Image (cartoon, rainbow, N blue to C red):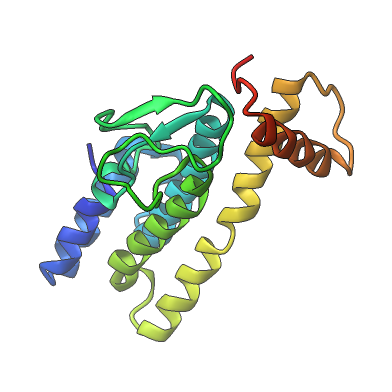
Length: 194
């Protein structure tokens, strides 16, 4: 399991060649159709951002709450790992947590999309030497990719929620309709799955 934390560790060693090699390996292993040997950092960050947007949306659809979403528990493959403290939410409440170490709700169900973006920013920091030789331009490139995450997450989330609710067409008011339903479900603690 190659994780964001793996890249953070590799970057901390200060060996850009080894970081490039690990990024290239990760691309070939998990995203072979997107592997770009000339731009491994950009290709990897973009691919991981897209896969995480889809994965976290699926978590939200199922009511899955990961107990500890730190960078060592975010796989670059776009798969869920470390099922330690986790569960599925019964009564809908965005503040639901399932880890005794998460007393403040950092990894609560409703915070998971933002935490994923935070973890992606840590990945981007680790990959900066591969994004551009000039640090300022590397940061710009990283920000461009990371700033696409909210719209990609929303795309996957809306598509899945439409399907979950039986909405067969895409309408401009779908987001508001779904958010209103979720607000009402939270008020009455409705069963999320049913």
